[in-house]
Length: 321
Image (cartoon, rainbow, N blue to C red; front, side):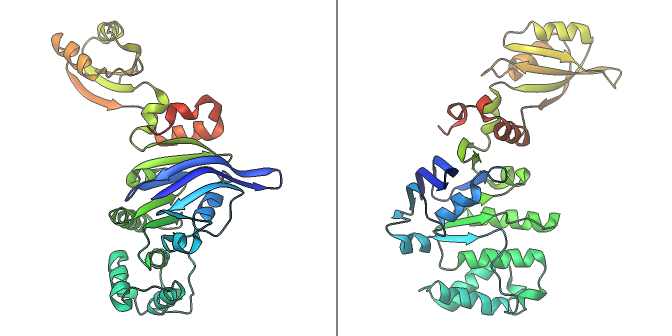
């Protein structure tokens, strides 16, 4: 659906984007992450046709963004960080204005009704936008991006400034959009990315430093797994037995707060899943396992590591397979 190859954007001698390539599949939700100044906004502006590239190739739904820009732009709906709303219009007036602006050919009334049902703004359809809450304004901004039924939706910080209830509502809306559209979501809220995105693309200093499915990126970054196990029995004997297991790289006992159990941190060798052998060993010695939690690096740790010192994490190790 989206194909980016060797994209470059220069301002004088400075690179905003330096030779990046990635794709977004049909009905895939991709999180596009990076620190301030990394090149996210520049890339999104190129994808939407608002900014030309210095070099490289961008294709949207089979249309070259430079050679066939009108068709490519019709395939994209865009919600910038500040929604492009007219406060003196009602929601109805605004969506009809956007319909005309985009030269939409779909049945006007049916199409707009479908959009307001999807984003759940029926209750405010005839109200002035200036009188709406921040959450409803975000929904109206998403609604304008859906006019024309574009195959690609690009959302830049769609939940910024919202309260927790509104954030959950917008997350659910993004999941709904992903059933029929390809979605690029740019945000600094990493929990939001983990909740809705199928894949992550992380950019730093104009270069892609990670491109991986969301549920694989932390494991591929660390190369090993860490477990927190709460076990009943003699802590010294248990620790000695765990350290003697094949595939255990490191193990330590934490100070206990319960009389009959101890918490252990166990790190396995790269590529080794130690959980089943651990359970079997403990059961054979009658040491009850009463808690087991994965302690792999979270997304925030990975993001900070990649954007602080990308040389420690070469792209090859965390690229999409």
